[in-house]
Image 1 (spheres, rainbow, N blue to C red):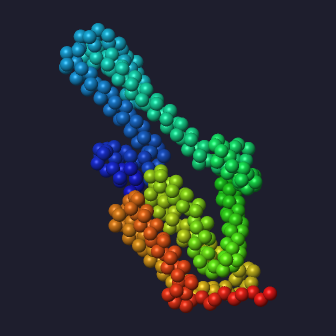
Image 2 (cartoon, rainbow, N blue to C red):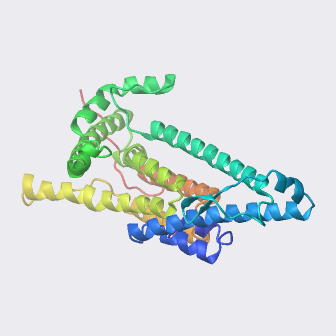
Image 3 (spheres, one colour):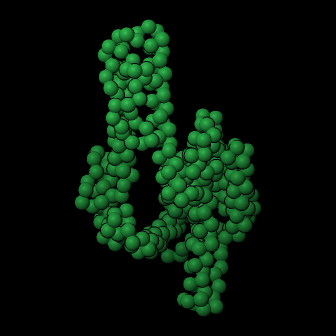
Length: 341
């Protein structure tokens, strides 16, 4: 499982190629990874040369050796990662013209692929890069989003160092701390807004917490899991989904409770006003168990069927939690009192 592509297509690579690909992963030292990547490039180039020689031999066998030998120039060879002069003639100079043409076609295809890859990488960098206040993006929708987010974007741009730039590489702890502080401030504002909206519409706090509030706090985790899953790192996507919930429960709840009972009001207690929380926690644990079981039954691969199953389980969890909080199955919440003007 250290390599997603190798795990998905195990029969398309030889044993040596699979070993090289595994040694390119982050489980080995940078020197080993660079060595294996260089060897893979050399083997791929050697395979292209051998394919060209095979085609020349077939061409000579068909009886065209005289015309090919009359026009055969010297060709360039590339072995062990270095460019040589005129060498490796095939049976004197027979078939040199076709070898040169084949190599030119291969080089042109490689150049086209490199150009396409470079363009795709530039587009991805433009699309996935952070919004900057002094550079408007292309496109009408992107410009509208940029204008709406410009004040907040400017504030974050001035207070959080961008560690992707060489100038701020050593400021990663400052970026982490300031980002955490901004997330705490945004979370406080979001919780306050959700509480006011739920009180205005007559919706219990628990329902607002397991629906709107949970969706708002989990969207960044969802986007991060989506990005790494598209890159072929399915294990990182699953680890992010599990680790974020563990962090939210143990740190996101434990740290505020510790500050409240130890620093703000020493020896105080925090009471929970939801009697249906035990049922929601039971449903949550059941959904986690079914998720792990579904991944195991799906042979530890992520596909459309598993995604639809997870969406169905989430819909069932939300429906049962909402029905429980509205006292459909059992009486857990008292009716809300009206204000006396």
